[in-house]
Image (cartoon, one colour):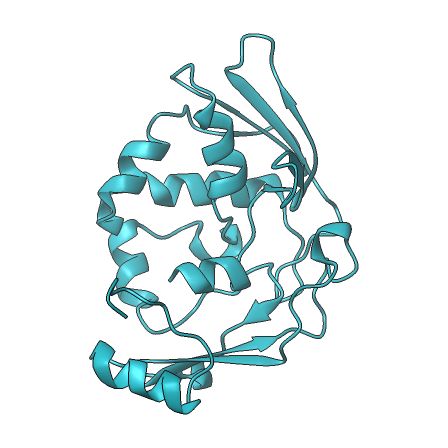
Length: 213
């Protein structure tokens, strides 16, 4: 899920890998009020979903509503995003949100941690329906990769395919990354055979979870 979030979806802002300052992503501009409680974002009009539709402020509103819906059975999201007032779509590309808490993390969480989902797909469904409908079907994102339904082999593997029409391919924040045409993630239930496959070269990446290894 973490891999999918990073490859298929995007947040309003990113962070510079060297300075850790905020940088544009879906939003090209942003503003923090003097009291540090009101955050305003201007979405890049060039941003597009994988199905070609433009990204708008309504997408941010719909994403927040889903994250605070108890039906998604995600207590962390319910609590975290419940610390904000409902976001407001000021215009097609301008969205604002007020935080209920005065904390430097509040801007970070909303701007750079929340992956935006398309309102034209999730805007009218409740959390429970979302879980049922999208267990084995991936909602198209704005990121450089897409997961097609036929690339999901239940209990075996998931394949990410690089998009040829990615809206931000030439943006500064994408220079030097997203270089693989396809990335296949295999499902291996036991870490021992997984480690053996890695040593043999059958898989390219392995996350080491045992100190003695």
